[in-house]
Amino acid sequence: MSTLNQRIQKRYNRISGIYDTMDQMIRESWRRELLGHVHGRVLEAGVGTGANLPFYPEKAEVTGIDFSRGMLDRARKKLEQGPNNSRIHLEEADIQALPFADDTFDFVVSTCVFCSVPDPVLGLRELKRVCKPDGRILMLEHMRSKNPVVGVLMDLLNPLTVRLWGANINRRTMDNIRRAGLTVLEEKPLFYSILKKLVLRP
Ligand SMILES: C[S@@+](CC[C@H](N)C(=O)[O-])C[C@H]1O[C@@H](n2cnc3c(N)ncnc32)[C@H](O)[C@@H]1O
Image (cartoon, rainbow, N blue to C red; front, side, top):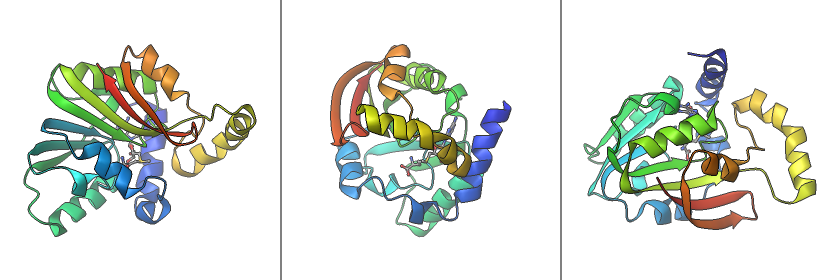
């Protein structure tokens, strides 16, 4: 595994204990709305501490992966303490080299993940590969602002956020999505041009 991967992993392990207090960016209503209709086999890439897990419908068979053990441990604890979650399975894996065959999942989900995947285009290509051709990739992702002044501010702050918790706040995620060969079906701004709900086709 590359040293950059290890560095980002370590940072998420380090903050896993306080992550739930720290992370207030995504409203529960946005998670609920994103996940309310998923069904069949679902991959959640970068499941973190499991913030999305309560919002999956009963009929969804969910595999959540993350490369940070610290974050996954938190998600596992929540699963154990919650109601019957036998349809949810968690495992350690890297988004950039997913251990699944092509065309496996009906839905692939990521929320606030592609700011920290070390090689985002490689990761997005992996999502495309494991999603069924008629499947959907659902995202809530933050990215560099389109406002030139705010964008430059984000560029200036980025080294700090990467150092503190491994997240790049100035990723050009829409460009990365297109470079990975994914098609954007829906692009809904949730907080200016910075936080978006996205529906993609592989
Ligand atoms: C900001 S957290 C978001 C967690 C969760 N999706 C949420 O909405 O709260 C980003 C997560 O992505 C994971 N991650 C980043 N790069 C990854 C990779 N290459 N493979 C697997 N997980 C990764 C991190 O370990 C972290 O748990």
